[in-house]
Image 1 (cartoon, rainbow, N blue to C red):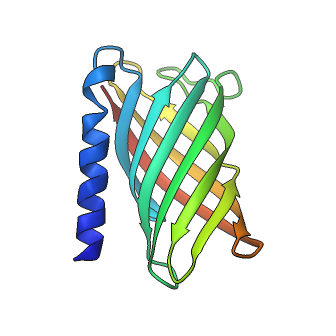
Image 2 (cartoon, rainbow, N blue to C red):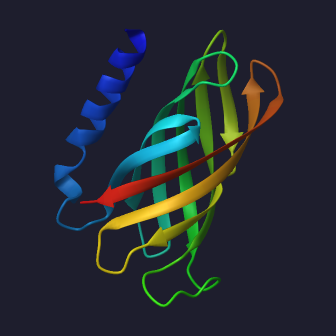
Length: 151
């Protein structure tokens, strides 16, 4: 019941952010699958920079709720494709994990995203090393695949 309540609140909060960005197609909302699994949102701040935020659930080991936020940089010239775009992205951010003990860490996400030419959707794969600093220093490697629809 607690898991459903947390996910419901996340969906409502993310849905309230949609109308202000709908016409500019700078705001994307989607799903991530892997470790962890949940909802993800992205807001483009420029041609090559964006913020992303995700609320997700980890099923590995002890069940836990994760929240991360990152500032991302995108390199569009590394991989060329005939249609759409295939940027490599990387950034820095933070992660909060609520489990037996509250954990806080620094994330360094790296990923590859395919952005369709005529459809406001991207699909992506990401790996995100996390160095927890609270309550103790500990390294975790998290990864997932996902998609976002842009409004």
